[in-house]
Length: 109
Image (cartoon, rainbow, N blue to C red; front, side, top):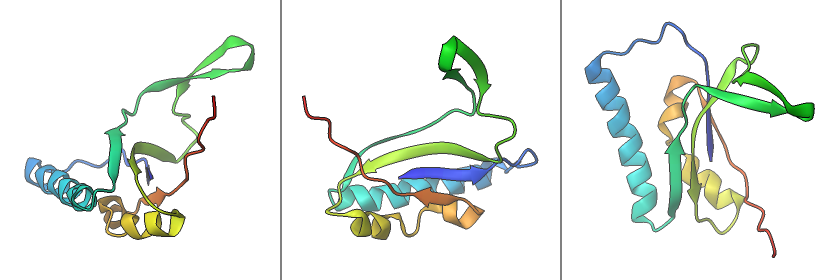
């Protein structure tokens, strides 16, 4: 699951609102973990760089992009429909964001 939202420069929650938001994320992810479906996850910073062909390096994420990827989790699901069910209730949905659900392609060595 990849968590996407719009960049909001004016977003300035109070410490209490931030704590409530963090708790909402912890409760949602805790529910997935309680089902034995959580594999891993991380929050991503808003800073980064992009390597393009011919060793061209650009600052990222791109300024012209209106969405940012704020983080991701890896869940254990039988299929994409089960993963979509796990995505329901994700806190980012209450802030206008979205959850992209994708399968991981296993690499055979």
